Image: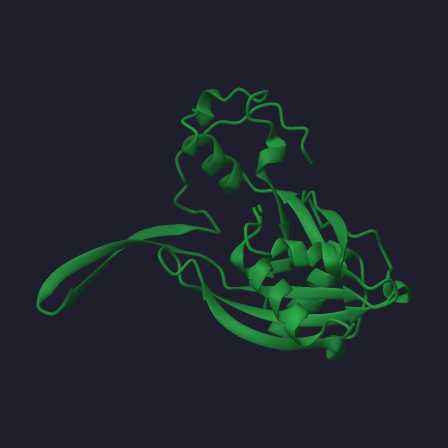
Length: 210
């Protein structure tokens, strides 16, 4: 995952299947305004809990946007980046199992597929419970994400996971106490808000009572 030897920037192709930038114009209180937006896919995320070992299941992967943000905020140049000063591991994130909605299937079915492809657990769709729906990236994209919850056991494990095609995903298991540290005051995470929201929801609603 972290064996990255070269990075550089280039123009966004007009036919990108994932991101379409545009300018949105509107009139508010009689004044014309505009805002630059991105059209992206809606998505699903899944809070995954292995009841056999009482572990929350996360995925770790390299995110170019995170790496770019860290380097440029520090004053570095991504087109000529020093990979010793800025190791690719800086761009690795801890996230919930998730995926974009780009298939002609129900959102529940897509969530079930992501659990299998990314984390290796083969479960019936009936065990994938809907939790909540919210908007992500409200300043730039406003896409919809639906969060699910799924309990799995060791018996459900059918593959090692890790994604499909050229995805490089590491499955990470954390104890409830380890996950709790992610959302404690003062914590510093390379995780998206949806992941932290999922952890807090689990702790409030599903974590075994002590």
